[in-house]
Length: 539
Image (tube, rainbow, N blue to C red; front, side, top):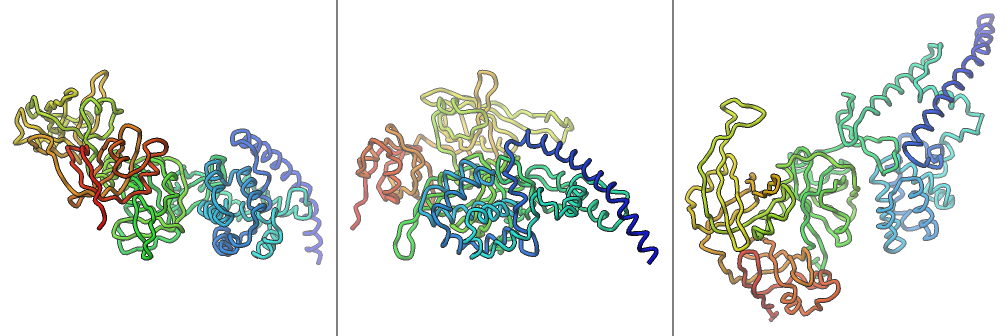
């Protein structure tokens, strides 16, 4: 009993000391927070204090469980307020806001909850907190209010001072003179958070115990990082029998995008889809995306995260339940970018030499013309390593058409393709890249370069199915046509195409043409240009 009294007295003596330490560290913490807020922009309305309580069920899992009821029950007015609040606190961005606002009430609700759910636990927690504030009745129906009530209270509530003290110690990694087990746990937690903070954007965590983590942010306004399980494209391709990737995240850069194409459902309804060629730092993959409404969502050279996708025969499929979010850029090797392009279009469309010279440096093109000069094979020493075994070969030749001439350099194993070619031969050279050196533009071979000897640009009369419209102007239209068991990009005069399709040339020609595809016709093709086209009337 005497020892207990002494212990109580010591505890009472230490309270002022502990309180003083906490106040000191809270001042430092507030100062640090102010500096972060200056850099990060407006504060998030202190929503962090009202987040639903953690536990065995994550906020993301809660979102999944309430999804159907939320879509069915949320009112239009509350949905609009929810959108405004989430935009204000940075959970969604302006682009997502504009995309979600289009459509019916149910469509907006579905797009909103799927967009936020796809960003992980912390944005999902913000969503639930805002929903509880705006619509208490719906929150009770969804069993969200109890978890909210159990969450950490605001700074003004002095009854939970011990929790606040513990949180302050943990955040600032301050250890009191006491050697209690609780303080040791706080130190360990602080070190764990520090290790997680060493993640780099879209990179693996530096902590060896978190090698499978991925550091992401949900919007332009910084949030605390959250880690999810990532699968590289190489991992996905190595498991061809894994149809459903579930919660695994695939990140890729969109290198190439096809035109919109169509298919028919079992009940003969017309639906749209398109292909993407995406790549990460490990490999590339072809992606099939269902839905016309998603077409404008994907931009070339932008990076996206993909969740809840399906794998079928080395093709990743994005359906209406898949979750796609734009993310920060990733570094993709140049050879993988080229390979991803070839997944969609095995051959770049042929253009005249004058046009090829106008493209930016390192743009993939195809040209054709007459060979005027072939140089000798020359050894080339790599700049980085000058040992004999690192010697490469190169060979140059000149190509000429009606618009000009250009030098083409074949590198390494590509030099064998010029064998059997002589001056005066008419050839097509596909998948080469432009090379700018001061005022001179030349072409370099790639791993996908092919040289095809032709007598001239042969005229082909074939029956082709027009399956996609890439672009359409008053002058010309670029389209995708399927014939001879392959798909090619072709160019046709818009006036000629509008006449055959029986559509007006003025206005939004592309949309009117898309409504007509697929369209079968007899065409006369020379090179990559359609000279004549005649519709095949259905019997």
